Each structure stands twice: as C-alpha cells, then as structure tokens.
Amino acid sequence: MKKSPKQPYRLWGGRFEKGAGEQLETFSRSLQFDYRLAQADIRGTKAYAGELQRLGIFSRPEAEKISKSLDAIATEAAAAGKKYFEGAAEEDIHTFLLGKLRERTGELADKVHTGRSRNEQVALDFRLWLKDAIGASQFALKTLLGSLLEMAEKHSSVILPGYTHLRRAQPLLWPHYLLAYFEMFSRDYQRLERCFESADVMPLGSGALAGGGLPMDRKKLASELGFARVSRNSLDAVSDRDFALEFLFAASLCFLHLSRLAEDWILYSSEEFGFLEMGDEVSTGSSLMPQKKNPDSLELIRGKTGRVLGHLVALATTLKAQPLAYNRDLQEDKEPVFDAAEQLEPALRLAAQVVETTALRPEAMRKASAEGWLCATDLAEFLATKGVAFHQAHEIVGKLVLDSVRAGKQSESCSLEELQRYSPAFDEEALPLLAPEAGIARRTVPGGTAPASVSQALEEARAWLKAT
Image (cartoon, rainbow, N blue to C red; front, side, top):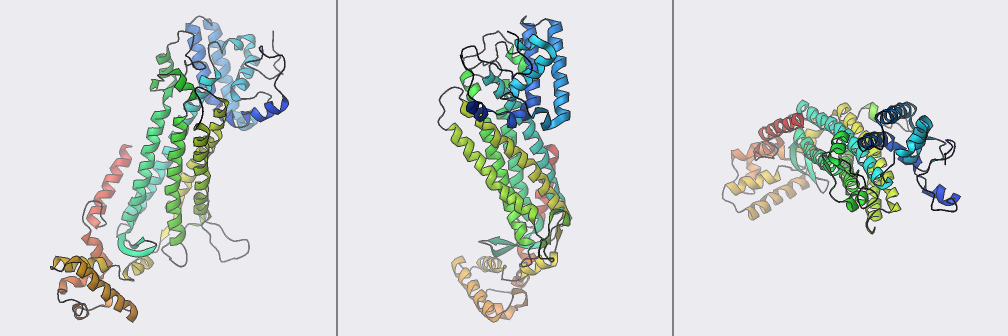
C-alpha cells in the first residue's frame, strides 16, 4: 500500500493491529540527537544500494537515481544543519532519511532496506561517525601538542619550582614541566588511535543478529566505506559498543589531563603564585569587582571533565547486563558519545589557545625556586658522594634546613663555613649547589630535567609530532 509522504516513514507495522501509543512514541524518539548520523547514514545507504544493484534488486538506472537522490539529501542536510530535521514525525534518522528518499524516488525507496536491519545500520552509522569524530579530536590534540612544544622551546632556560603535595620540592626547567603534559597528551593521541582501530570494523551484512540473507560482498562494501576489516561475528557486530566505551574512556582520560593542566595554571596565574598571566582572550572579568581577571577557560575545562567522566559511567552501566544480541537500551549509547566528542575537540582547541596566549613571569618562578631550600636533596647527595651514609646525610641537611628556616636564611646566602658547621665533608664544590641552576644541571639521566636531557627530549618530541 502506498504511503503518504506526509505520514512518518516506518520500517515495521504489519504485525500490529494498533500503532504504538503516543507516550511510547514520544519516549522512544531519537531523531533529536541521532540526526548527527545523517551523513554517515547516507554514505552507508548509498553503498548498500550499490550492492543491491549487483544482486539484481536494483537496475543500474534505479541505483543511479537512488544515489543521486541521496547526494541531494546530503547537500540539503549539510546546508540546513539541525533545522533540517526539526518538526519531522519520524522516530529516528534512518526512517527520516528513507522518508526524504521516498519523496524523491517514490516506492523505489522501499527497496533500499531489502535484507538490511536497523541493528546493523545504526552500528555502521555510529562507527562511521565516531571515526570522523576521533580524527577531529586527534587534529585538535596535535595543535595542543605543538603549542606546548613551541612554548617549551621559547622558554628553554626558565626555572620553576617542582611540587609534591603542593609543596616546593625540587627546581625544574619549564620545558621539562611542559614535556610532562606532552607525554600525557601524546598517550591520549595514541589511545584515540587505538579507538579508531576498534571502530574501524564494518558490521554491515550482519542482519538483525544472524547474518544477512543476501550474498553480499562484505569486503567490497568495507573497502568502499573506508573500513579496514569486516566484523567476524554477526551477534557481536550488532550489539558491540566496546568502541564507543573505549572512546569515552580515552576522552575521559584526556579530560583528566586537561583538568590537571588547568588546575596547575589556575594556581600559577593567581596572585599568590604569580608565575604566569593568561591572555585576555581566554580570561573573563567580574560583574561586580573591576580588578578581577578570572581563568574561566580553564575552569570550564576542569568542570567539563566530570561531565565526560559521567558519560563513561553511564554507558558502562547501560552495557553491563545486556543479553545478546541487540536491545533497545543501545539507543542510550549515542548521547554520551556525541556530547563527549562535542566537548573534547573544543576543549583541546581552547587549551591550545591558553598555551599560545599565556605570558610567563620568569623572575617570580626563579625566586620561588631559590627559596625554601629546594637544593636540600642535592646537598644530601653531595655528602653521599663524599662517603657519608645517605641516611646520615639526610639528617645533616635536614638539621641545616631547620636552623636556616628558623633564622629566615635562604640557601644562596649560606657560606661554606656555615655548611661545614653541619658536616666537614662539605667543601667548595658544594657551594654552587645552593643555587637552583646547579641542582637542575645534575639531573642528567634520560628523562631528567638537566638542560641536555631536556633538549634531547624536546628533539624527540618534535620528531614524534612531525611523524604522527
């Protein structure tokens, strides 16, 4: 029976004497969020229609008409954006697009779904969409990684205090500090690469759960759609959402790293630290206090971290007790992933802008590195090289620090005579260690903060980024 284009397009109904109730229809609608899959769905349907032509379901002219009509719909949807889908009666993006196709091709559109299940269709669309989203996030990550390296190379000799327990610990080179975040974000990039590989599996041809009933060339379809391989089990293919969960984990971990950087720089840009000043482009003011310059960009990044972590927990909870194969619960897989992806890419771009527009205050950083006896470990290690057992050396330097703190004396004002009051093993070679530069220079192991080690690490990081 011919359907009116004004009525919602449906893929089922003959089995039922009544239509679905209004409450169920409203509750089960997904078009308001799965419209994002439109371009992926069109790509999949075009490829599938081509395979139906090979199988004799479509003639060549019919397949060409379908293909041209889908191209026109794709152009319309891209131009109109979200408005293109507003007010539609269809329950999801799949039926919406078939309805649009029917408006252009009539009953020919009813053949497009031959041998295809929405279960495999949505799995295909979701994978196609996520592969694109991963690529966009990786591009933004590379921008951030490049910004970190540029800042590190620009300020290669700046010294800052390193912290443990948020207490000054040992002096560091600023590029060594930035390279710590480079390591985190490069792991995030590699994690996203593995997520891409997980998503790069084509489920089309799996049917609803048991495998398609038509002799499709799945490998040819996979190649046409840009997939590296085809799924190996139809039950798994339609119900697997590991790739989505892996993306949420990767996005969550990336946000955790962004949040740690944000926390550092919120502190470092405060008046209490004064190590850096964020650019006006990434700061805001107060509606009441004229003097304020607030790090809202970083606070928002830090705040969105909890949101994305929540999406990871939500999807894991949805998946934890589903029997094989497909269940409608899986409709809940998309909104967490859509939102996480739509938060991650802008957060990475914003973080890169923060790095690019931030000005350092090297004098304040060096001053903080010289205060608080951050050279204490170097002095203890010096004594150990002179034959003093390290436990005793630790005690000796600890007493030196205690007395100096009580007297309000900093390390660089300490004389050799004063050092020798605590141990005769101190000699003139110990005096340079009272300055933070000498302590930094001693950390020459690979991965250490000595200038040569940091220079090598920067070279390796730049090479990795160029090759990625």
